[in-house]
Structures are given as structure tokens and as C-alpha cells.
Amino acid sequence: MISGKTEITVLVTSVSAIIGQGIIRSLRKSRYSVRIVGVDRNNRSPGPYLCDAFHQKPACDEDTSDYIAFWCNILKKERVDIIMPGLEVDMFFLDAQRQLFKELDVAIAINRQELIALSADKWQLGEKLVDAGLPRIPSSIPENWEQAVSELGAPPLLLKPRSGNGSRGIARLYDERDFDYWRMKSADNWMLQRIVGDDSNEFTVGVFGFGDGESIDPIILRRRLSGAGNTLEAQVAYDLVIEEATQRLTGYFKPLGPTNYQFRKEDNIAYLLEINPRFSSSNSLRTAFGFNEPEMAIDYFKFGKIPLMPLIKEGTAWRYSEDFVHYASNII
Image (cartoon, rainbow, N blue to C red; front, side, top):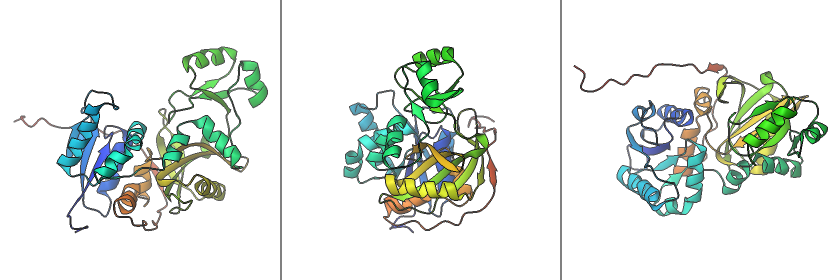
């Protein structure tokens, strides 16, 4: 029995996406007895069937009173104890509605507002790294191709959106023709970077922060990416350069709750690719190695307890495709 209840009711958003499904798997492996309520716009995926209850988001904008009413009704009907966002869009909504959920007495596993806002703009994040004296990938928003090559060096160069996550919108530029095409396609949401390191030196790091520069000891995974930018293969790694960079970033940015740093290493320097101030796509892989962020989130955000230091197992994990079949109930 936990705090007078036999179960913790956890609402997980975006359960049709890989992050939300990873949160569900991690919750099922936690030491808590959980009842999982799923929310998503898409009801045609395995996600709803992985939950104990499911609610489809209404077809309305998220800044409308109808959408707020949808949330209030679910929280009351399902007696939700804590909400865990599975996608960035849900994190932004919850961030904007903190006062509402506080009044409804529902815990939210969500980071500090300042870090959420900063991480939404990779250019501004890079500027903060410079202010903190931390390594920054050479970056530019050039007027033309000549300026790009002059500031960043010989191609290929990397064009990436200033906002967004994963590999969406990222393109390698080899010449002026590429530059003109992708700059126009990306409107005003773009920046260029020098390509640092290589695919064999990419790392994803899980941190559970306490908002004061302290955290649970991180878990470092050397990773290989899928075409969509999600972790396809992960191996537990012990790398002093990445560990030191993680400590410096945590001390400076003061994350709260589940936070993901992504690095590339070159010439023994750890370059930060991005900060995801939320559960990331590799959260279930971290759970498999002993670093269960949803369980930690219940400890910290619901019960106000510092999570126990996890015992990390060594090993390698791969993601693979698997069939999920739901049979109609009227089949004889």
C-alpha cells in the first residue's frame, strides 16, 4: 500500500509514439503498482492497448477552453496522481498550464521553465554554453555560402532547425546549391554547424536532476541512431570526458527531473548536440540497464523523495521491429 492507495494512477501522453510507449514499459517495471491512463490524438496504434485506460485528444487547438476542459474531465474521472509527458508538444502545454494542474492537485513530471524555454532554441542554447565557458560546436547563421565556409570551414556542413528534436529537418550541405535550397525550405528556423566527431562517438546521457545543480549519478550510453534520429543501438559506457561534461552542464543549467544530454566527442572534447528537458526516446533502454526515470519521477514529483541511486548493469541494447496484433472481440 502506498500513501493509503493500492495503485498510483499515472497519465502518460503521446502513447502512440516511442517515448510514451517507453514510459509505459518503464512504469510496468517499476516497484510501484501503477494504473496507466494513456492520452494521444492517434487511437490506431499499439499505444492505447498498452494502457489500462485511454482517452483520445479532441480535434481542437490546445489553447482553447475545450482542450482545457478535456484535461480537467480526465483528471477528475481517472483520479490521476501524476502526469508524464511523452512528447515535446505535451511538455510545452503542461509547462504553460502549471498553475491549473497545481490547483487540481496533480503532480507533473516536468523540468524547470527556464531550461524548457532555453532548450527550445539551439542557437540560444549555444550562446549560453559560450557564456558558461563550455565547449560549443562552431555555429553560424550566415548571409551566404561564402560566409558559411569562411566561418565554419570546408563542407560538408550541417543545417539544422533551431527548434525541434531528433533528426527532423537536418541536412548536410555540400555546396552553394544545397545551401540555397535548404535555407529557403527551412524559412527562418535554421542554423549551420561544423560536423564534429563521427557516428562512433555519439553519446546519450540520462540525468535526473534536483533543480539545484545536483543529480542522480548519470547513465552514459554510446549510441547508434535510426534514420529518424532515435537511438537504435545503445551500449553502457564509462567515459570520463562525457562524465565531466555532464557534471558541468548539470551544475550550470540545474535540470529538474528526467533530462537528456546528447553529445559528440572529437579530440577528447565533448560537444553538446542538444538538451532534451524531458523523457527521451531512449528512456526504456536506460530502464533496462537499471536507470528507471518514470519510477524516479514518482518518487520525486509525487512523494517528494530523493530517488535511490540506481545500480547500473553493463550491456548493449538494440531496437527491432515486432508485430502487435489486436483481435476483434466479435471474432468466433
